[in-house]
Length: 207
Image (cartoon, rainbow, N blue to C red; front, side):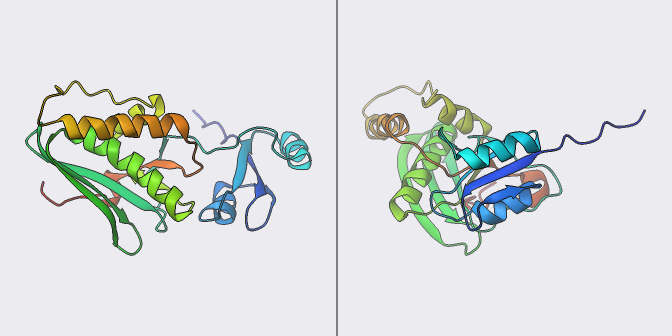
């Protein structure tokens, strides 16, 4: 059985290094990633793309919040990776953000009691807020689909009990949920392809 040809796509870049219409994602990415307040969108036909480019975006243009990177591709090196670690689950929990290209640790937090999923969730929000603070538009990588689903809902789905030990942690969770509700972001949230790339750079190396 013959395979169906790949569906053609066109990428409009309104704000980027060189605005225009591009035929591949790699060309669009080269014009937009790392570019402050880049605006771009995918279209299924050349005609749609040309009309959109001429009229400029009349809507909020943001990359999808969750993107699974396909096997065989390479990670974007100018990006922020986030990860969490937990000694027991629940247990002592910490999370951090590490720049993929340089290996530089941008932030780290530790809590006496938490879960890995809460840490992954907080790490993504902390990463987005940190990029906003630095005024940098680069992708954020995570290896947690659960955390990505919570980000999409803008709500932490943990059932961990709130008590004296976790009171400070859940105060930060509430702050993170409030930040998601009150802020928008253009930085893509990408799923790290652990099977093909190895552990995410922000990994604590305790497996």
